Image 1 (cartoon, rainbow, N blue to C red):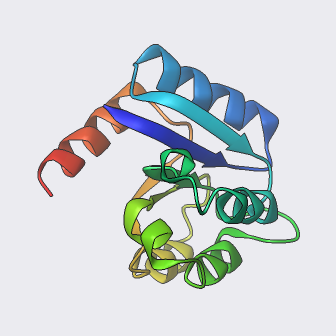
Image 2: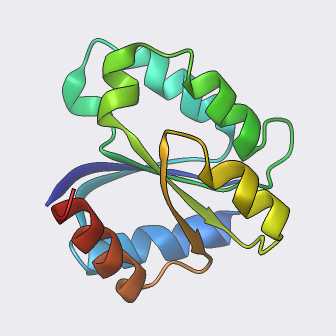
Length: 133
């Protein structure tokens, strides 16, 4: 089981749905929710010395005000290596723009792209992907 998931999305409804799906499927033991890329970066920096509080997976929205998913990933690459190696990123977005998908899926931190809303089937596919790595 995944210990910690970090959800990053500016939409409270999407965060509520994603969190509930993760909890109901017992996909992860803990879920931390941040409503902006900057809040998420702050969280990661504050917990850099606490390996148990570094997420195993980050579900990241692309389209957010102030700091979008692209900018978050750019800043994520400046974090300590142990954070980058532990936290794998899954894009969870309503965007189906092929340019967005192509641009973000090539990022080395990104392991998967999922279109909202997050479902039990999506989590099962993630679980299988992680087991095969």
